[in-house]
Amino acid sequence: MSFGFGKDFRITVFGESHGNGIGVVAEGVPAGFPINSNEIQQALDRRRPGGNLSSARKEPDRIQLLSGITEGKANGGPITMMVENRDVDSSWYRKNEHIPRPGHSDYAAYIKYGGFNEWLGGGFFSGRMTAAFVMGGAVAQMILRAKGVRVLAHLIQLGSVKSNAEISDSWIEENAPKSPVWCADSGESLKMVEELERVMAEKDSLGGTVECRAIGLPAGIGEPLFDSIESVLSHGVFSIPAVKGIEFGDGFRLCGMKGSDANDGFVLKEGKVTFLTNHAGGVLGGITDGMPLIMRVAFKPTPSIGKEQHSIDLEKMEETAISVEGRHDPCIAIRAVPVVESVVAICLADLMIRAQKIGRVEVK
Ligand SMILES: Cc1cc2nc3c(=O)[nH]c(=O)nc-3n(C[C@H](O)[C@H](O)[C@H](O)COP(=O)(O)O)c2cc1C
Image: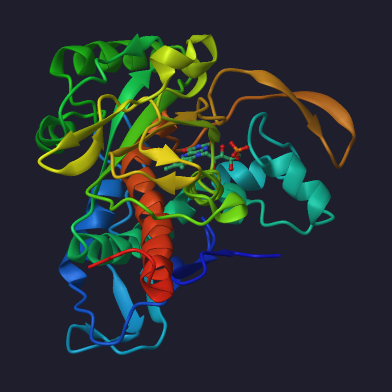
C-alpha cells in the first residue's frame, strides 16, 4: 500500500475528505533551498472552489507548516504541511451509507477494505486529497523555477466545447486565471460556461480536457524505459482522481499520420540543435529533447450527480435508485487545472534532481 510518489523528490499524502484535515510530507528538498510559504498559500487559493461552477463546500484552506522549514529555508528534514477540514457536512452520506454512488470509488473501496472503508465524502478517494498534491506541487514549482522551468495548464475542452489550443504560453499564463473555467480563449470560455450551466440545470455533470506544458526543460531529463518521462508523468497524473487518459504531443492523432508528417525534423538555430515541429511533445525515447513538453489529460464527468441512477443497497442486497445531493463540482476538469500543474511539477522536480545527482545533464 502506498500513499506516496516519487524518488529523489517524494510526496506522501494523508487525510480524508470528512476527517480533520489533509496534508503532505515532501522529502528531497536540498537543505538551504528557500521556501516561500505565501506561494504555497497562493497555490491552495487557486485550487479552492469558487463561484457557482464548483462545489459549494467552502474550505478556508489556510496552510499550517508543521516541519522542515527554518527561517524560510528547507532544513533538510521532511517538509510537512496541512490544511484543516472546516466545512464538513456528512448528512447525505450517513443517510445513504450502504448505497454506492455510480462512477465513484465507493463500491470498489467497499470490496477492497471489506466494508471498513471510510464512506463519508469518499474518504481518501475524494478530490479533496488534491489539496495535498497542490501543497507538494507548490514546493516542486519553486525547485523548477530555480532551474528555469515553468509549468502551466489550461482547460481546452469542457463537454462538447473545444478551445483553440494553438495559443502562446504567455497568453495562457495571462488569460486562463481570468476565466471561470481556466480556459484562455475568452469566446470559448463563455460557451463552456453556457453548456455547463445547461447541464447543471439537468442535475448532471460534464468532463473535460486539461492541457499542460512545461517550458524551459533541458534535453536529457528522464530515465530509459521504466522511469521514462512519459511513464513517470503518467503514473503521477493517473493519481489524480477522475483522470481517464493522457497523451503526449500529438498523441492519438499520430496513429493516422505518415512518418514524414509525424517526425520532427532537426535544424540548427544559432548553432544549437532544435526542431522544425513538436509533434512528439518534447519527448524522444522517454527523454526530454529540449522542446516544450506538452501533454493533455482527460477527465471524466463528475460521478456525484442529482439525476436519478441505478444502485444497490449493499446491506439489504436490493436494487435501489440513487440521486446524490450535497456539494459537488459539476465539472472536475475545471478544478483540476492547478492540480495537473502541481503533479507535473512534482514529477519533473523528481526527475531533474535525479539528473543532477547522476550528473550527465547540465541542470542549474
Ligand atoms: C479536484 C477534484 C474534485 C473532485 N470533485 C468531485 C466531486 O465534487 N464529486 C465527485 O463525485 N467526484 C469528485 N471528484 C472525482 C472523484 O474523486 C473520483 O471520480 C472518484 O474518486 C473515483 O475515482 P476515478 O474517477 O478515478 O475512478 C473530484 C476529483 C478532483 C481531482
